[in-house]
Length: 199
Image (cartoon, rainbow, N blue to C red):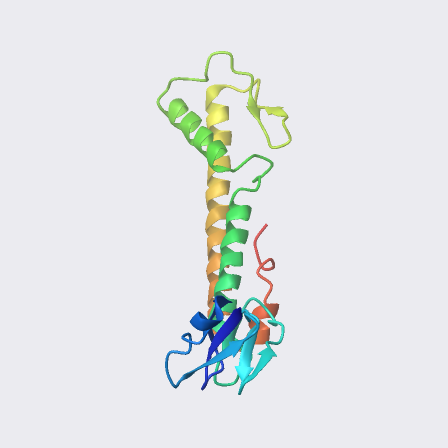
C-alpha cells in the first residue's frame, strides 16, 4: 500500500513510500502529522492544503526557492547574484586566455614566453635549431631575427599580456561591484556579464 505522511500545519510532505497497510497506520507519529493512504506524493512536486494534495506551480527559475508560509516560489536574490558572479568569473577566465596581439596567451604559452625571456636574459642565446616563434594563426615569426630582437619582441608581448590581464581584472571587479549593488531580482537576471570588457 502506498502512503504519504505530511505536516498538518504547513502541508509539507515529510515522507512517503510503499508498505503493508498495518505498517502504514503507524506512520503518522504525532498530532502534527497526517497520513494519506493510496498514493506516494513526491515532496518536490506536491504539498497538502488541508487533506487535499496540491501540485506546486512550475519553478519560475533556478533562482527561486519554495516558501512554505506562502506556499509559493519566491525569488532568491543571493542565488541569482551568485550565479551571475560565476558567469563573470567564467568570462574573465576565458578572456584571459584569448590570443593577445596575435599570439597565444594561455598558461602554457605564457610559460614558454617567460622561459624564453629568462633564457635570453641569461645570455644563453636562441635555442639550437631556432626557426622562429609561432603566433596564434600558426605562422612563424622572428625566424631571421637575432636574440636581442627576439627578446625585445617577447618582452613587449609579455607586457601586453600583463597589461590586458590587469584591464580584464579591473573590468571583472566592476562587474562584481555592479551586481552586488543590484537589489532587484529582474535586474540581476537581466544583467549581461559579457559586455564591458576590454579587447
